[in-house]
Each structure stands twice: as structure tokens, then as C-alpha cells.
Length: 101
Image (cartoon, rainbow, N blue to C red):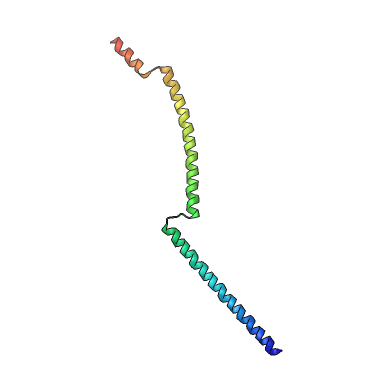
């Protein structure tokens, strides 16, 4: 009976050690694979999530500023069109001055 228990204890220790080795191999393989993927992505000029998010935020801000500037430009052009229409055509003043001389 003691020999049986000793055998099971040894088998248990062996399996525990084997699981530790397997876990270590898994971790090492995972690290190697992640390193390989990182190098592969870097060689192809892919961007990281952080870089993508930063550029995305810049684009959103630029579009917002563009819309504000477009609205301001439209408002200024509207005022400019009204003042030109009330003053008359640009060449009319010059033609009138030439007739007087």
C-alpha cells in the first residue's frame, strides 16, 4: 500500500512539473509570437491603436474647425454680396468718371 502511495505521489509530482514546463513553454511561445507579430507590423508601417486614435481626434477637430470656418466664410460672403449689390457694378463708377472729363 505504501509503494502504491509513493508511486502516486511521484506521478503527481511528475505531472505538476510537466505542467510547469508546459506553462513556461506556452509563455515563451506567446512572447516569441507577439514579438514576431510586432516586427511584422512595424515592417509594413501599420500604425498602433494609440497613433490611430490621436490622428482620428485631430481629424475630428479639423473637420469641426473647417465647418466653423465655412459658416464664417458664408456669413462674410453674404455681407459682401449685399454691399456690392447696393453699390452697383464695379465698372459703373469708372465709366461715369470718364464721361465727366
